[in-house]
Length: 129
Image (cartoon, rainbow, N blue to C red; front, side, top):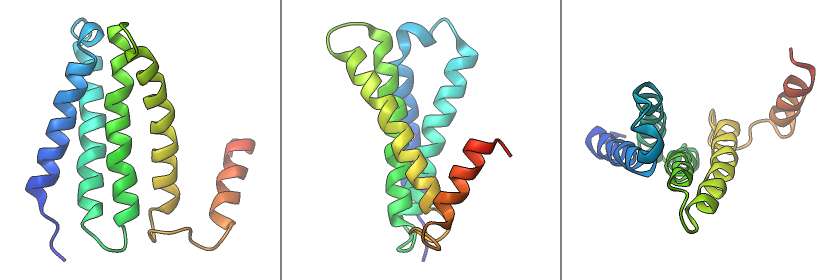
């Protein structure tokens, strides 16, 4: 199945531009940090849209694209006005949930092998090995 590259890159570019706009009050003084955050949000969204084009990896792709949008939303807290900081905190929480779930679903598009994937993550995070 062909995965259209142009819509994926367009979505990634739109989210990258939105990230710069959302974080402008802070990112305008930090060009290296701005470039890094633009790259993260844009690449997550691009990868998500590309993966969503595959029937097997559709859920993973939707979650990754959502993680890119959540990364954008996180930067709204830099405006420090109205409900934007609260929206930024909620976006930060959503980012970790979406990105973590996408990572757990990635190889097969579903939970592979029952609890083994989750128990491996638990062992790695607790033991540090």
